[in-house]
Length: 228
Image 1 (tube, rainbow, N blue to C red):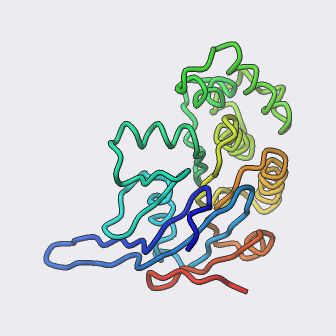
Image 2 (cartoon, rainbow, N blue to C red; image 1 turned 60 degrees about the vertical axis):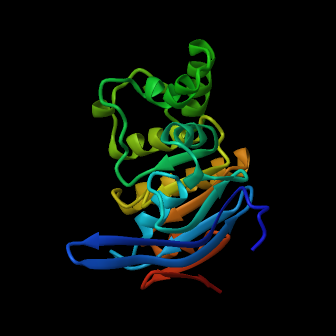
């Protein structure tokens, strides 16, 4: 496998120990992600999709193999260094929005830039511009409890994309939404992906959405295979 991808893993494996037993969740997974590429990972519940996403994002460390982001191997870094890499190169979207309830929409979206040390005024301007682009310009000062489910998820996606990361890792980003809202949120992710050039890796159970991605992979019994 070439090392040219902005994110890639080699012979990735994950085994958990439960009492006297070792449970292998992932085995010898190879995946390379190029700039702007859109990848879907599908599989049954419990197949290890979320575990794979956590390993690719450096949220967990593998028991075998390696993950590389921008030519840097995550497992060789300290926790603080991995945190910096995540902030600089990666964005995360989950099934539940995980917006901070005490902050407004604009504050939530600006947070990755503020953590990076960007000037508050500039960070909020970027957050405001992106929220306006996705139809939430009138909701800047609303807290999450004041937003609808679809609006919360849009804000969460804006937060993941505001720093224009190399890759966004999305774990069932539309799984908690009704069909129409899910389609609207998905379309928004595709539009931002094309405009910003951020690669998108999306775990989903929705084969209709998965079919619209550049590549599809199926995860079964710990192994990943591309779907033609």
